[in-house]
Image 1 (spheres, rainbow, N blue to C red):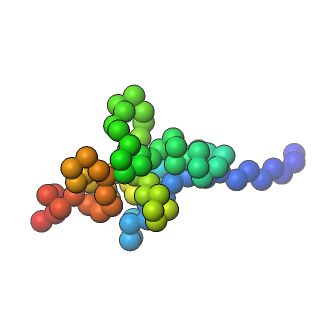
Image 2 (tube, one colour):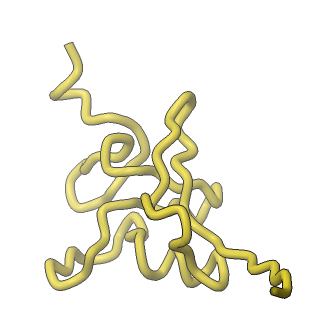
Length: 88
């Protein structure tokens, strides 16, 4: 048996204390970070496409990624942070 090291990229939420990753399977990932962003995350102004399996947001200004719990809409733009309407 030979050893083979493979590097995979997956999104991890950059919200403080969040441990969420875009892929839950231990062996699942993308060949590049750019590919992971393209597959899993919307950009702030990107139109919604219900055919895609995206629920993350990538902020190109900061390079940070946010899971579905840590971004919300303001008008037609996605912004980082939990939706204040659901905070108590």
